[in-house]
Image 1 (cartoon, rainbow, N blue to C red):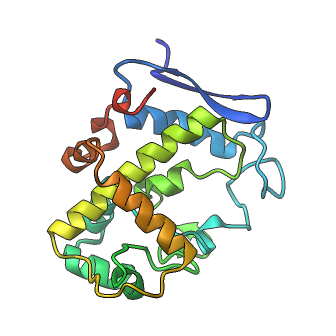
Image 2 (cartoon, rainbow, N blue to C red; image 1 turned 180 degrees about the vertical axis):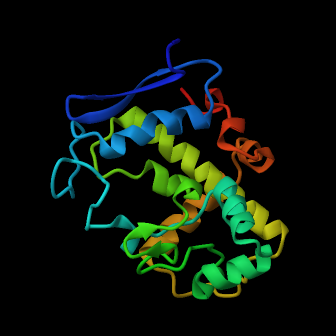
Amino acid sequence: MGMSKVKVIYEEGKIKIAHVADDANLQDLLDAWQPLCDDEEVAKIYAEQNNICKGCKINCCNTAYVIPDIISFKKIKAYLGISYEEFVHKYFQREKRELGILRLKPDPCIFLKENICTIYPLRTLLCRFYLCSEIEGKTEELIYKITWTGIAATQVFAQKNNLLVGVKDGGLSSFDLLFKKNIAEYCLAPNVELFLQASEYRDVPLRKFWF
């Protein structure tokens, strides 16, 4: 068996990407990242035992501020079998849409039932990359850049398809301000088009993001 296109290691108490092949794609990174969730060797701040995410009662989905990347956004909508208009109306906070932000209904996440994610195979990049573990700086910067580019693509798509209400300017929380700032910044990034054209995570080449 050949070497994986992306290698992620846990070294000196931090998660680190150690290798990225020239032809690696985002799915390769996600495949390498996923095993960390239930790796007992990877320390997790909120883990109650064994350093595994499975069965964790301190569920990040209870309070998370989740804006889907465009690939997840389209896949969840297709899974639900509804229009984009109905999707944003039923599953996203109207008060945030009025501020120009597509946030999934929270407290807990609308897709969390009995502490189980009901769309786990379709979950967003924010959810896929989140670990309550220490992450090496360069690696953290990479996943941050990828995630926000995907979110910005959702914003561009929503604007083009009139899915945002966007009528209020006031009432922004600190998280709202941060998210709006990041979205505005990343909407201008050329890699947004990569996400808009992609159907799957494997369609997004990592070389466009890797340093």
